[in-house]
Figure (cartoon, rainbow, N blue to C red):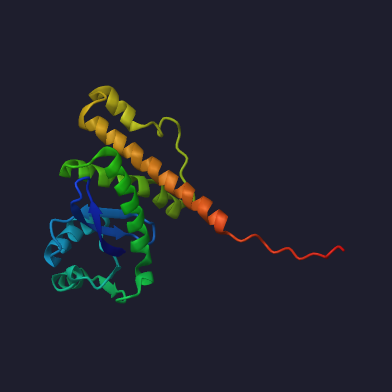
Length: 212
């Protein structure tokens, strides 16, 4: 598991410190807003948010941030977790956390701008929508090698059922719009990356006879 702190801004420009953890085996991404950067508070979020749900990881990769020192080291020793600290100026050693954190920050910023997220409740909802959009496709591909193909009944959008019951206004409607935006933004970003890689790819060299 690799772990890092991300700094996301809401529509008011207020910075939200976010704990970001990724399972490097499956690509499962979990994140949570923090009240502060104190090691004890960060450690409790790891225990309650990750270990309580997914179990104790064998190893955690962290950077040299102060929030991962002191009390955090005691928690790692208590659970028998090996920790590996990246170099001071070796960002490539923390590449998985940086890459996933970058995707999280990009989609988050666009959702905040599009839906004008201000309240803490809506911010939590937006963060959950981004993580759901990321992990719903990446994790199953990592485990099974391909995206799962569900039947039409299993693939029915639950938001349609919820809207028919709760109506097309209020928080339920807003949550549905945010989830849809997160999925669309992720697909758009993936498509743009594929186009960019294709354009940067050099054409194969063809060696042939020179005709006078």
